[in-house]
Image 1 (cartoon, rainbow, N blue to C red):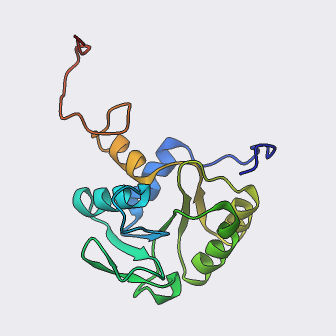
Image 2 (image 1 turned 135 degrees about the vertical axis):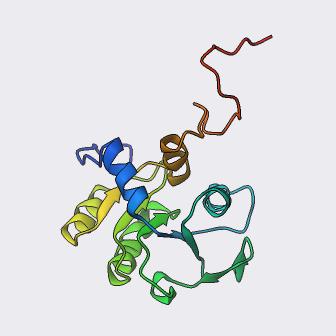
Image 3 (image 1 turned 90 degrees about the horizontal axis):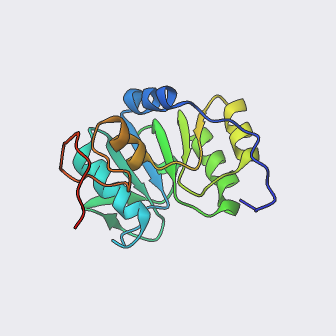
Length: 165
Protein backbone atom coordinates (compact mmCIF):
# COMPACT_ATOMS: atom_id res chain seq x y z
CA UNK A 1 0.00 0.00 0.00
CA UNK A 2 1.34 3.42 -0.83
CA UNK A 3 1.29 5.79 2.10
CA UNK A 4 -0.93 8.14 0.06
CA UNK A 5 -3.64 5.51 -0.42
CA UNK A 6 -6.61 6.47 1.72
CA UNK A 7 -8.46 3.59 3.30
CA UNK A 8 -12.09 3.86 2.27
CA UNK A 9 -12.90 0.12 2.04
CA UNK A 10 -14.50 -1.40 5.13
CA UNK A 11 -13.84 -5.05 5.81
CA UNK A 12 -15.92 -7.64 7.63
CA UNK A 13 -16.64 -7.15 11.34
CA UNK A 14 -15.17 -9.49 13.97
CA UNK A 15 -18.31 -11.70 14.02
CA UNK A 16 -18.22 -11.84 10.21
CA UNK A 17 -14.52 -12.82 10.23
CA UNK A 18 -15.23 -15.49 12.83
CA UNK A 19 -17.99 -16.83 10.56
CA UNK A 20 -15.61 -16.95 7.57
CA UNK A 21 -13.12 -18.95 9.64
CA UNK A 22 -15.86 -21.25 11.00
CA UNK A 23 -17.26 -22.04 7.56
CA UNK A 24 -13.88 -22.66 5.93
CA UNK A 25 -12.53 -26.17 5.57
CA UNK A 26 -9.43 -25.41 3.51
CA UNK A 27 -6.85 -22.61 3.37
CA UNK A 28 -4.33 -22.10 0.60
CA UNK A 29 -1.29 -20.06 1.60
CA UNK A 30 -0.03 -18.20 -1.47
CA UNK A 31 3.57 -17.16 -1.02
CA UNK A 32 4.17 -19.88 1.59
CA UNK A 33 7.81 -20.18 2.61
CA UNK A 34 9.90 -23.09 3.91
CA UNK A 35 12.01 -20.63 5.93
CA UNK A 36 11.13 -20.71 9.67
CA UNK A 37 11.92 -16.98 9.95
CA UNK A 38 9.10 -16.01 7.57
CA UNK A 39 5.61 -15.06 8.78
CA UNK A 40 3.97 -17.46 6.32
CA UNK A 41 5.90 -20.38 7.86
CA UNK A 42 4.79 -19.36 11.37
CA UNK A 43 1.16 -19.13 10.21
CA UNK A 44 1.43 -22.45 8.36
CA UNK A 45 2.82 -24.20 11.45
CA UNK A 46 -0.05 -22.86 13.56
CA UNK A 47 -2.74 -23.77 11.01
CA UNK A 48 -1.35 -27.31 10.64
CA UNK A 49 -1.01 -27.99 14.36
CA UNK A 50 -3.87 -26.03 15.92
CA UNK A 51 -6.76 -26.07 13.43
CA UNK A 52 -8.88 -28.55 11.51
CA UNK A 53 -8.20 -26.87 8.14
CA UNK A 54 -6.74 -28.69 5.18
CA UNK A 55 -3.76 -26.42 4.46
CA UNK A 56 -2.30 -26.08 0.96
CA UNK A 57 0.99 -24.39 0.21
CA UNK A 58 1.38 -22.41 -3.01
CA UNK A 59 4.98 -21.70 -3.98
CA UNK A 60 6.33 -22.48 -7.47
CA UNK A 61 9.97 -22.67 -6.26
CA UNK A 62 9.86 -24.94 -3.19
CA UNK A 63 9.02 -28.68 -3.42
CA UNK A 64 7.55 -29.15 0.09
CA UNK A 65 6.78 -27.21 3.26
CA UNK A 66 6.24 -28.82 6.68
CA UNK A 67 6.14 -32.27 5.08
CA UNK A 68 3.40 -31.31 2.60
CA UNK A 69 3.81 -30.91 -1.16
CA UNK A 70 3.65 -27.41 -2.58
CA UNK A 71 1.64 -26.35 -5.61
CA UNK A 72 2.90 -24.01 -8.32
CA UNK A 73 -0.40 -22.12 -8.45
CA UNK A 74 -3.94 -22.10 -7.08
CA UNK A 75 -5.05 -23.78 -10.34
CA UNK A 76 -3.00 -26.86 -9.37
CA UNK A 77 -4.80 -27.49 -6.07
CA UNK A 78 -6.94 -30.65 -5.82
CA UNK A 79 -9.94 -28.58 -4.62
CA UNK A 80 -11.20 -25.00 -4.55
CA UNK A 81 -9.82 -23.43 -1.37
CA UNK A 82 -12.26 -21.73 0.97
CA UNK A 83 -9.69 -19.11 1.99
CA UNK A 84 -6.73 -17.87 -0.03
CA UNK A 85 -4.29 -16.43 2.52
CA UNK A 86 -1.88 -14.16 0.64
CA UNK A 87 1.75 -13.47 1.54
CA UNK A 88 2.79 -11.64 -1.62
CA UNK A 89 3.94 -8.12 -2.40
CA UNK A 90 1.42 -5.40 -3.28
CA UNK A 91 2.04 -5.48 -7.03
CA UNK A 92 1.37 -9.25 -7.17
CA UNK A 93 -2.10 -8.98 -5.58
CA UNK A 94 -4.15 -8.40 -8.78
CA UNK A 95 -2.66 -11.57 -10.29
CA UNK A 96 -3.32 -13.55 -7.12
CA UNK A 97 -6.93 -12.34 -7.20
CA UNK A 98 -7.33 -13.55 -10.81
CA UNK A 99 -6.00 -16.98 -9.75
CA UNK A 100 -8.28 -17.05 -6.69
CA UNK A 101 -11.37 -16.28 -8.79
CA UNK A 102 -10.41 -18.88 -11.41
CA UNK A 103 -9.80 -21.48 -8.65
CA UNK A 104 -13.26 -20.90 -7.16
CA UNK A 105 -12.02 -19.52 -3.83
CA UNK A 106 -14.61 -18.10 -1.42
CA UNK A 107 -12.44 -15.64 0.54
CA UNK A 108 -9.38 -13.57 -0.30
CA UNK A 109 -7.43 -12.88 2.90
CA UNK A 110 -4.55 -10.40 2.71
CA UNK A 111 -2.02 -10.63 5.52
CA UNK A 112 -1.01 -7.94 8.02
CA UNK A 113 0.33 -4.88 6.23
CA UNK A 114 -1.31 -5.86 2.94
CA UNK A 115 -3.99 -3.48 1.66
CA UNK A 116 -5.22 -3.08 -1.92
CA UNK A 117 -8.56 -1.31 -2.34
CA UNK A 118 -8.89 -2.05 -6.08
CA UNK A 119 -8.26 -5.76 -5.50
CA UNK A 120 -10.81 -5.78 -2.65
CA UNK A 121 -13.49 -4.13 -4.81
CA UNK A 122 -12.77 -6.47 -7.73
CA UNK A 123 -12.86 -9.53 -5.44
CA UNK A 124 -16.20 -8.49 -3.94
CA UNK A 125 -17.62 -7.82 -7.41
CA UNK A 126 -16.62 -11.41 -8.29
CA UNK A 127 -18.48 -12.70 -5.21
CA UNK A 128 -15.54 -13.25 -2.86
CA UNK A 129 -15.40 -12.20 0.77
CA UNK A 130 -12.33 -10.09 1.49
CA UNK A 131 -10.23 -9.54 4.59
CA UNK A 132 -7.24 -7.20 4.42
CA UNK A 133 -4.43 -6.28 6.80
CA UNK A 134 -5.21 -9.11 9.24
CA UNK A 135 -3.44 -12.33 10.15
CA UNK A 136 -5.39 -15.60 9.87
CA UNK A 137 -3.38 -17.07 12.77
CA UNK A 138 -3.99 -14.10 15.07
CA UNK A 139 -7.69 -13.95 14.17
CA UNK A 140 -8.19 -17.70 14.64
CA UNK A 141 -6.35 -17.73 17.97
CA UNK A 142 -8.21 -14.63 19.17
CA UNK A 143 -11.59 -16.19 18.44
CA UNK A 144 -10.58 -19.51 19.99
CA UNK A 145 -9.17 -18.21 23.27
CA UNK A 146 -5.49 -18.81 22.68
CA UNK A 147 -4.11 -15.35 22.31
CA UNK A 148 -2.08 -12.91 24.38
CA UNK A 149 -2.11 -9.25 23.30
CA UNK A 150 1.35 -9.75 21.76
CA UNK A 151 -0.06 -12.43 19.47
CA UNK A 152 0.98 -15.65 21.17
CA UNK A 153 -0.41 -18.10 23.70
CA UNK A 154 0.96 -17.59 27.22
CA UNK A 155 -0.63 -20.77 28.54
CA UNK A 156 -1.75 -18.86 31.64
CA UNK A 157 -5.43 -18.36 32.36
CA UNK A 158 -6.03 -15.80 35.08
CA UNK A 159 -8.18 -12.82 35.84
CA UNK A 160 -5.35 -11.25 37.87
CA UNK A 161 -2.93 -8.84 36.26
CA UNK A 162 0.51 -10.38 35.84
CA UNK A 163 3.09 -9.04 38.31
CA UNK A 164 6.34 -8.25 36.56
CA UNK A 165 9.56 -8.27 38.59
